[in-house]
Every structure is written in C-alpha cells, then in structure tokens.
Amino acid sequence: EADIYQTPRYLVIGTGKKITLECSQTMGHDKMYWYQQDPGMELHLIHYSYGVNSTEKGDLSSESTVSRIRTEHFPLTLESARPSHTSQYLCASSEVADGYEQYFGPGTRLTVT
Amino acid sequence: SQKIEQNSEALNIQEGKTATLTCNYTNYSPAYLQWYRQDPGRGPVFLLLIRENEKEKRKERLKVTFDTTLKQSLFHITASQPADSATYLCALPYSSASKIIFGSGTRLSIRP
Image 1: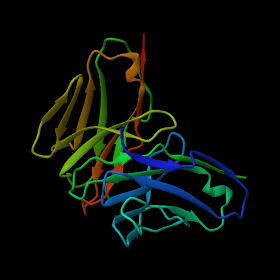
Image 2: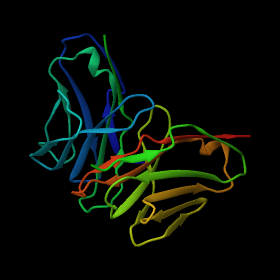
Image 3: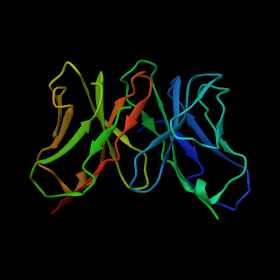
Image 4: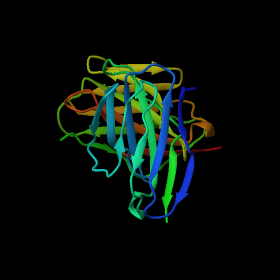
C-alpha cells in the first residue's frame, strides 16, 4: 500500500470559491506530480516538482497553482473554482532516478457547481 | 511529440484465458515502458517496468514484451480471473525522461 494521502476525497463547491487540495507522502520522495483525469480519459500532467522550492507546469494548461515548501507536502490551489474544473485530481510521487514507479494517491473528485 | 495508442474498446475475456493488451507509441523509442492498473475511482497502481534492452519481463501471471522495431508493448495476463477486471494503462517517459506520459488505457473485463 502506497503511503501517499489526498484530502478531501470528494469535494462539491460553488463557483468562485478558493480551494486547496492536499497531498502528502511519507516515503521521502523528491519527485511529486499532480494529474487531472476525466472519466474514461487519460491522465494529464498539470504540475510537477523535483524537490523543495521546485515547481513546474505540466503539459495540460491549468489555472491551478502548487507549492512545495516541505518534501512531503504538495498542495494544489484553485483561487476561483469554475465548473470547467470539475474532474478527478490525482497526486503521485516517485524516486529521483528515472524509471522508478509512480505511487498514486486515492484522488480527489472535485465538482464545481 | 510522443503519442501512446491503447485499444479504447473494452476487452472481454472468459475466466482462465489469457488476456493480451496492446500499447503502441509513435515517435522515439523510450528507455523504458511501464504498465499500471487502475480501478474505478482510484489512482493507478504500478505493475511492471520493462527497459529498452529487455525483450520480455514476467511477474507471477503477468508478462510484458517490448518490441522497439514495432514500437509496441504487449501486456499478457495468463489464467485470468474476474479480480483482474480493471483498466490497464501503458506509460513511457517524455524525451526529457523525467516525466512520463500515460495512455488512455484499455478496460479489461473477465467474465466467470
């Protein structure tokens, strides 16, 4: 069982609200990632980090922002939620060396009304 | 840019048979390729990695092959069981190798 946690698991929120999705891992991994996935569709990388104070945008344009102040914590923030942000958000982490598996959290299912 | 093609149609297999899933990629040959399993509403779980210099990799009832000439990987589950029903994702690194790209997956259903 992977030691990577996401909260909340489910969130229903109104348009315009600010939200933060939490992701924590206890494996000491330097690399962390955020993916967005719609039902039946592929995962799209929206943010990644190679370590503390390192963050980069992924390939899918996203209005969200991330921070990496501690190795174990990689929260994602939406300043003003919109219905188009409705999706599943998955956090993952991995070892630094290439080829290592990614460990995924259980995901946050976000619905913006 | 690299593209991954997995059969978008669901695969229905009788219990006990071998399930074979296909992953094709379009551009450069990656240094490695990974397979993940994803159950509904959950994050993917890593199954196997195969490197470019390996033709085949096995783990229990799972077998993965990697053909860099065909730009294809095959994922086999032998003696399939209903508990193997899930979506299986192929993943491989971007050219920078520090990130990976996932295919959209193939949904596998094993009927008793």
